[in-house]
Image (cartoon, rainbow, N blue to C red; front, side):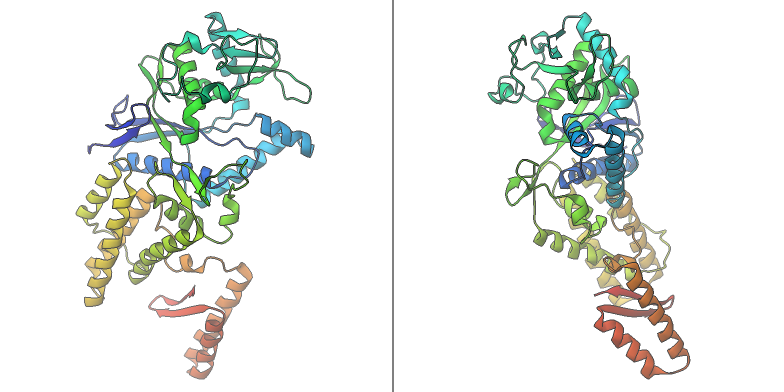
Length: 467
């Protein structure tokens, strides 16, 4: 088995990956709070760790990929009060919208997708555990976690003494320490609440991930509960720091052996956020570009680096992907069976080095250029064509791009009615050619050309694409 290296956010260095159990990788990725449509930040995180999922699979790991849905939160309650809709109506709608967006990006299915509201008992049990040890305590408004009881608090993010620590939590004179955080928030007016032995209310944000990992994934007799915990860089503190602390104190285990975080998405030089008003919804980008094009663009920047989103770079990235599909058209309807082992090995070696997509994309560019040059010399070389098809299939397997039909890829943006009209005109043109009415056939070709449609006559019939 090849060596795999990942950047561990806790150690602040690249380390060799060794799973807790041989050939099994348990991964937990923090998912969305489902009160609105997904944005490019969600897409960035999903694609980054989908790539990790694919790379581990390519290295013969059984991957147990888990992503949660936070379906109880202040923002959801606010939307309920504004819209008059129920919690389930809102959260189910946005969970389905999120899943549709992820399908557009060709994200592999998750093994487990726990919801906060379906794991309340596990959260209550963990809170009761912490209360019994006096690590958690009760005030008039909440159950709080006492960070001073955990000597390792701050070791993940290295921010325990940061001036922003106190600024990012709610000030409450009843708290033992200003940086203590809520595990359970007691019922308020116009709130959503649940019964518990320590008072009616709802869970804080941080407790849900610790409880769900402990319930669904944890190795109970190991030092670490799971192999990898992942999410956006903005979650490192306080969210992941608090999760790690809760788990240590409640279970005497470390939550994750490795921590991985993807970089921010910046738009116009500012970090994408709701407060800045520059949160670019994924559904809006998908109106103009296919999910595959967006995926390829987001893969073009290393997952740990911040990505400066702009449409010029997106268009340039699409043109780069276009070249792969133009090569794929040249080997259309050929079965792959002769993968270039050196190509496969080089791709995997780069991905095994902390998901180095920069090297991978340069290797793909080189393969495309060499493939076209060789086809120019001998268009009938079937072994070469089989090798190129196999190479493209491997790219789709590990990167999640290149798997679309070579011609339909270039038809993106054409509505169904127009497609039907184009297909009907192609049938009329084919019939005219059979009748040797070449004037009519050329007339139809010209008509389609004016619509921005290019026709290609192949051994498999006439195919078309948008210019």
